[in-house]
Image 1 (cartoon, one colour):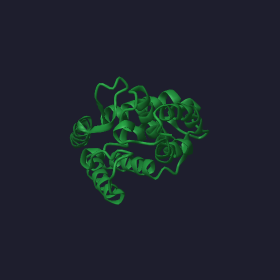
Image 2 (cartoon, one colour):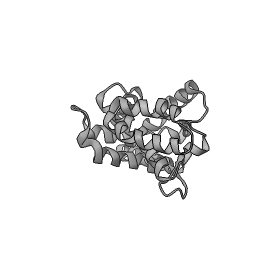
Image 3 (cartoon, one colour):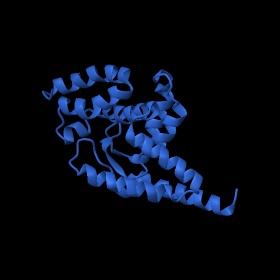
Image 4 (cartoon, helix red, strand yellow):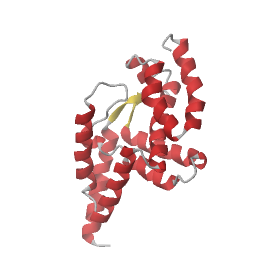
Length: 196
């Protein structure tokens, strides 16, 4: 351990603390306030620990947890892009790529490369680990919305078809049993409000 290595690691950790300042569109389960991206990242990492035992064969839960802890750090520079929000996808991807280079670049070279590669793998969602991680990233918010009595679904006037296309499809891609569990619950919520 050199002084420079520790200085770089601490610079990254101090920068990562800014993720707690990024407010998301999803509310806490008790509907008291919006969650921040640091809370979201912690929560879905916990989802991976709890639900990872049932992940598809070959999924490495420890790698999934690493991806989930890293995946939203780019929001420090790029901001949050709500799933039902209106934004330029290409512009957001460019901002996130630049943010990843800057933020992971704070680390020593070996860790910068490892973390950036994990982030890119998550974004591509092609490996079994990344597909499962992406599924969990999409699985947590609807559960928060159900607990909060609708949350961002009400604010964005979301319909079930939108949820199924933008969220359900991605959950189903990496964790179909989670979508099988969640789908009837969200259908019931949307049906009760005439938004099916």
